[in-house]
Every structure is written in C-alpha cells, then in structure tokens.
Amino acid sequence: MVLGFLTAGSTFGAASTLVVALLWVGDRKLESDWPHSLALATTVVIAAIGVLGAVPAGWMLFGVLATLVAWDIRSFERRCQATSRIEDPDGLRRRHFRWVIIVFGLSALLSGVAITVHLNLRFWMAVAISLVLLLGLNRVLIHYKGINDRTRVEAEKRSTSPGT
Amino acid sequence: MGRFTLLSVIVYGLVIAGLASLNGGLLALAIPFTLYLGMGLLFRPPKMRLKAYRTISRNRVAEGSSVVVTLIVSNEGERLEEALIEEQVPKPLPVLGGDTSLRLCMAPGDTARLEYVLGGRRGVYTFEQIKVTANDGLDLTRRVEGIAAEGATKLVVLPDVLRLRRIPIRPRQTRVYAGFIPTRLGGPGVEFHGVRNYQIGDALRHINWKASARHPQSHFTNEYEQERVADVGLILDARARVNLLTARNSLLDCGIQAVAALGETFLHAGNRVGLLIYGHTFDWTFPGYGKVQRERLIQALARAKIGDSLVFDKLENVPTRLFPPKSQLVLVSPLSEDDLPFLIRLRARGYHLLVISPNPISFEAEDLNIDLAVDLAVRLARVERRFLIRKLLEAGIYTLDWDVRAPFDQVIHAWLMQLPLWYRQAGFLT
Image 1 (tube, each protein chain N blue to C red):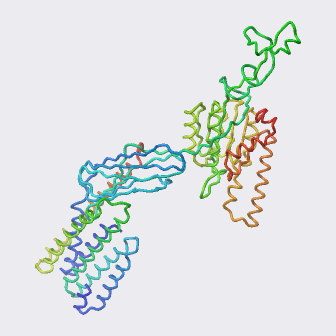
Image 2 (cartoon, chains in turn blue, cyan):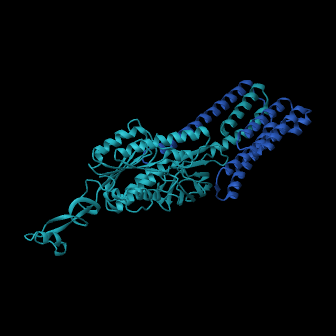
Image 3 (tube, helix red, strand yellow):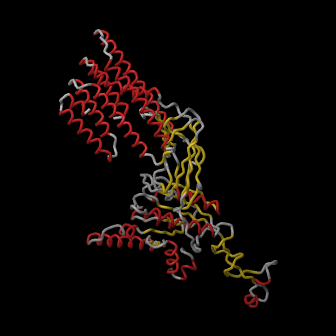
C-alpha cells in the first residue's frame, strides 16, 4: 500500500499507512483484540481513499488482503493463547491456514478479475443489482443474528433449568 | 464489536461508497471481505451432539486434600472444525494443576480428555454444565452449548475433626441406654449411690455387711449410680452479624471445628446428638447415634455458610422445642449482648447449657495495625466481653472464651482442668 501511494505521489497516504503498520507491529503485546480490529478498519479506509484518489487499485487490494490475513492470524493466535491446552496444535494451525489460503486465493482471483474486467451497466441495472446485494446482505445478517440468539438462549436455558 | 459485525460494516461501507461514487475499485475492495464472510456462513459449525462423562477421584475429602477430576467428552454428531471445551469449575475451588479447557478438532466418534487437580476449603460444591464453543475454520460463526456431564457432579469437602478426651456432662434428663453419664438413680453402675433392703436374688458380694451387722433382722445391699446416655443438642451460630470474616479465615470456620470435635466426642460416648445451624436459615440435623449420625453432622457442617436473615436475626427465635427438656445444650457462638436474655431463659427452663465462644476481638485484632486508638478500642471491647461472660457465669452458664489462635482441643481440656474439682465431679450444672 505504501508503494502504491508513493507511485501515485501521495506521501500523506504512504505515511498514514506506515503509521498504522507500526502501530500494528508495536501492539503485539496487548491482550485485547480491538487495536487490531481498529487497524484493519483504518487500513480499509486508507485503501478506499487511495482508490478514490486514483491510486492503482491493485496495490490497495493487495494491501487490504494482506491486512485481512494478518488480522485473522492474530485473532487465531489469541484464541490459542487463551486456551490452557490444545490438542494437536500443528494440525489445528494447518487446518486454519488452509482456510486462510483458500480465502486469500479466491479473493485475489476475483478481485483481479474485478479490477481488470470492466462492464458497462445501465444506471437502473446498477441500482437494481445494488439493491439486491444490500437486501441479500441484510437478510444474511438477520439470519445469522437469529442463529446466534437462538444458540445463546438454548445454552442459557440448559444452564438454568432445574436438575442440571 | 464482534468479528462478523466488523467485517459486515466494512462490506456495507465499501459497497455503499462504491455505488455512491460509481467507483468499481471500492466494490473490488469489498470482495475479500465478502468472501471471508461467505466462507464463515457457508461452513458454520453444525449442531453439536456431544456426550460428557466426569469422574472425581474421591467425592468426599477432608479439608486440605486434593482430588483429580477427569472429564471425557465424545462427539456423537458431525465434525467440529474447531471446538473449545471448558469445564466450569465451582468458583471457590482453586485449580492446583492440569487443564480445565481444551481446543481441538473433533471428528465424529472422537473423544477428548481433560484432567485437572482441585484443592479446596470446606463446602459442598456442584459442578455446572460444561461449556462447548464450536466455530468454523475462520472463527466467524460460533455455536455455544452447555452440556450436562454424566457421572460425578458433586464434591464434598469435609471439615477437619479433632479428637478430644471425654467431656463430662451431667444433664438432669437421660435416656434409657447405658452410657457414661451419672443419672442420680440407683441401679447397676460403678460409683456408690446408697444402700437398700436386700432382695432375693441380689449378689452376695454386693451386700453391705457393716449396715447389715447394725440391723440383725435385715440385710442391706449396696446400690450404685446408674450411668446412661443423654440427649445433646449442638447449636452453631452462623449469623453474619456475629461471625467475622477476614481474608484468611472466618470465625464460623473456628466454630465448625469446635462443633465437629464436640459432636464426635459426644457420639463416641454413646450419646444422642442433634445439630442446629442457625443463620440465614436453620439447618436441623435430627438427633441420632453412632457413625451414621457422625456422617450426617459432618455433612451438615460442610454445608454451613455465614448468612443473615430478618427472621433468624436473634437467638430468641431458636426453636427450643427441637431439644428434649432438661437435656444438654452446647452453643458455639461468638456471642453478642442481645443473646444474654435468651441464654438465661434457656437455663431457667432447665436446659444444661455450655457455651463455647470464639473470641472475635482477638480474631480481628490480629489483622489490624495496632496504634493508640485501635489499642484503646480493643481494650474496651475486651472489657465489654468479659462483662458479658461474667453475667453468663452468674446465671450458671459456664462459658469458654476461646482465643482462636490456640487449638481448640488444647484450650478445652485446659479449661476443663481449671474448673473446681467438685464442679467437675458434679458435672457442669448442678
């Protein structure tokens, strides 16, 4: 991302990215997750500004992808540290990284296609697709929230029911 | 903010920004996050079907001992990509070693084993459900379930029981069974009681020849004092307002130690012993004999907790009808001033009362930084307490003012030896 900003002649963007990266590295000792989540969100915002500011999208895409992978790995590390024992830690790590590689690979492929293939859409088609996307996403989130709430309620019911 | 929520906000933001600015690059930036979310939703963890079985090396242990808890969890359902099994150890129990949580991948038919060591203080502890959290490979979606484990669910840590020598008591009312308590009645026994007229069948060795010689027309037989068992009621005061609690100990624990030792001693002598624990509720252990009753008393003492209640705020509400009339009562309580009228009334009703009072002043003073003001306060409190105990003595209630820094067994025997010989021979109350 820094290289992308420098290529486009934006030193402010490069500096901001460097600051976030340094904060990320220096934050390794902190116990909580939120600094890394904040760093991820900040990186995405910087990348979006870069794209809007005519920085080549490829650099921004790669930077965001790398940040997402780093965020995921950090979260996995914290989960493992919080557990007193892990059975077959190497196997668990291998399985997790398999997922990460799949996501990384597919994302890189699809994003690459997205920035190279240009489609001309009429306005109404673009609006319709956007609406479908947004409604779909909304639906997914409500469905997921429903699953979470049901699971939590079931777990609470079992823990408070008499005889258990 | 959860991981899923954060990623959703990022996707929404990029999509909306991309559409608003008609910039395909922003939409392209949303692709990795959308894919990440999609994978998490698509491969979310299935409904869990797990069975858990818990074993504890010993369900009943003495205070200070440790136990090994083994938990075996087996997967009878679908594959769990990443599962975290957490044992919910009862809070006051410290984990001395081993693991109480385990993260692993569970294929169908797999079993997981957790083993850990617990120590602990007196109490009855119930193990709650095991918490299992299953997540997908990217930890975006989770299922959390509580699973009740079969097998052992309760651990009882019993208080230590000190061994005491026989404590002489002499209530007016005794029971029919032979024991060690003199009854003031003639019959078979050891101590000489009196003489009576000879009856056919009396053993020749029991004839009192001196008395018989003074009355040529009749013979006299020696009679001995019957020794029987008695009813003993133990009352443990568990009210929060009199039992002080510090970081290291509580006066109730001292009281429990005393009650356990006394209960053991009285039961060993064959007496019928009941226990009333009086605090936020009253826990009554019906009187009984022998080892079974000892076990009941110890279990009740293990359960005892400090508490307060408006109903059981004062000793006046102790239900005295639980105790047979004129039986022996032993009250273990730090005492407060408003307990005095009740104790005097008990004595007036004919109960034989012994009070063991753990001293709250010396107990608390140990943890204080002694300066002039504190020293003066301690001295005043000691004077008040000495006055209270003197009033009890005047009412005929012998009270042991126990400095809990000294072991109970030594204190009680030393105190018994200090009582006048005639009083010891006659018992506590005449």
